[in-house]
Image 1 (spheres, rainbow over the protein chains, first blue to last red):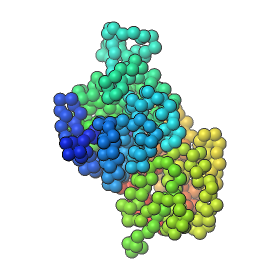
Image 2 (image 1 turned 180 degrees about the vertical axis):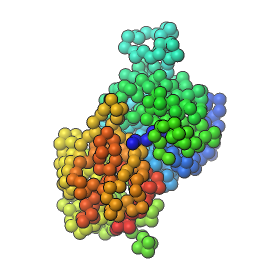
Image 3 (image 1 turned 90 degrees about the horizontal axis):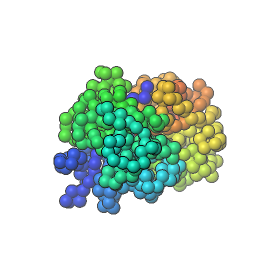
Image 4 (image 1 turned 120 degrees about the vertical axis):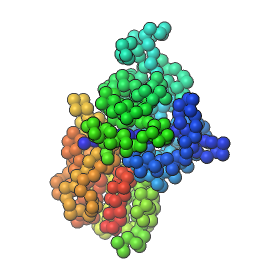
Length: 275
Length: 211
């Protein structure tokens, strides 16, 4: 039986000395956590199923550093690596894959040019192309236009739709997240990495309504992201959100739980995991 | 054990795109000297050949086609050959990926797509860690492994005669997750041993022992 995946995410940035570090992503808690290669090794030893590296600088220096990080990690860690952050072209993808990544995550560039998804999956295979979607709730009570084509979702008794956000969540697109996920699948995405900006950083749990809605709308795996703070949150992500994988960052970085703790908890509750 | 003390040479056939670095690093970790190459001399002198596997069937076949007779020669020499993922699929007679495309025809059978199934929640690609059960215990490549989790990332799988199946995995259907023609020294796995942690490295080590 295919197991559910636990995926630590490393947000890689540069410190004053120009070396790569991982940061906690809560807005109030932007502190350095450590060396990405060391952390990757540690998560590998904890039985992580996969690792995601996100270059949060999305700059040329960031990209160069990232290539170096991937190369060093691939010498030590023999589990799948997904890399994202500022990927804009087939050349970017090629360089990242050549360094030792297995999958590329594309976000803003995919929204701006859907053909990039198709091109990428034609060349590298769809298993290689992860479309990352950042989304935000828009309640119908809020003033908004053009609601007819939006998928309505019930969140705690209120109706809303989810809008795709780009450029690190700063820019609105007016695009419905569920429709976009389906389109990304059609263009050849092999996986969806779904982050809800409403739950990200809250530690109150994954955004179950949108995770479930997208997991049930597409036939490709969905990785839930944003909000994991307790063991139960992972359970709900799989059980209620129907996610295929659950991603988390700070819960691992600050040593609250190890990957093994989470897997043990899930296994005891009947969720298939690799122990 | 003594034999693996001498560094064996592994050549990874570089037919274009994908992540070949992890295969190289994986084999280096278990003590091999590795070249990623299309150089026929290097391939000929290697103790074992890897057909790697990321990408699309058609692209791979197009790039490797001109070297087909060279590969047949290597097989005639009983050079150990190890296909990984797509590298295993291209050994078959034909594939349904991107129409109907001819493969190497080194092993009988074809490559078909998983059926999506909304009722069972079966998703395609088959992506993640799944259980591999060893059926043919006499094969040297799974030495010391009975049943273990390995990492898969594919939408197509191989159908072949039972005699070539050495491992099976369940994903909606039971499919061959490893095949071999032991007489010809040809091996193939559908999963990624270079991405499957320590159990995966064990497979790479076992292949090195055969070489």
